[in-house]
Image 1 (cartoon, rainbow, N blue to C red):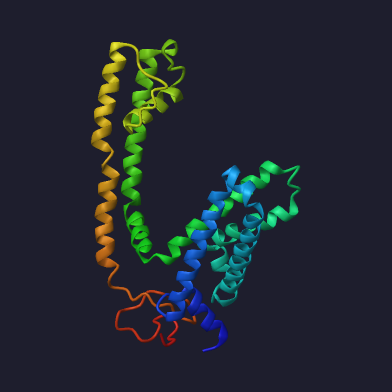
Image 2 (image 1 turned 90 degrees about the horizontal axis):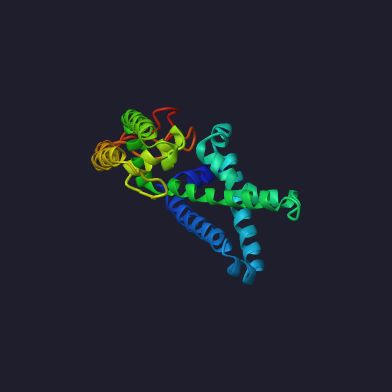
Length: 267
């Protein structure tokens, strides 16, 4: 096995000892880097430990840059990795720090702050190192059509409720437009209840009561849909053997497989 394959199995694989060690170390580095971003947003802490924050941020950026370059180098299909979800996230995790070298902070202060917030994308890198995340993703994929139909029904409901409240209450009671009334319907059905807009007429209050009761009955629907699919995903997720092929990158094999069914490389 050449150096490129060894790097591939260490970075992308989780079945080897080196791969598990790499994942654990990188996971903790991601958590620490995100924690630094959170602490840096507190002005008193930022002023007291500014130099430490800068040094730490550059340390994490260099490490994640090296990781990103190694992933591109060792990947059997570098372009596929670069354009994938995780490839884009990995790039966004390191890009803001380098962008700070290009822009003048005194002139583009707001831009720099926005770019620095993109470092929070590092938290998405955590999903790569949690095996259970694959089950959740699969459950969401299986339930996406049902969820779309459900939200379509909810959207229709809030449009009807919003339009009715707009007609019943009118502008004098704060329902100045249908979009404003739809916002009220969403807040009411989800049981958030900000209270910034409220019906004043008897008919409006009756309709609001119906919306509240309806909210209790439908709020658990997506939870039930996803829970069922998670159960299915857990059962079906036990069969494939999660071992990365060092040659082509295929990671779903039969439990008794000793060779990759795509390219024939020994697993």
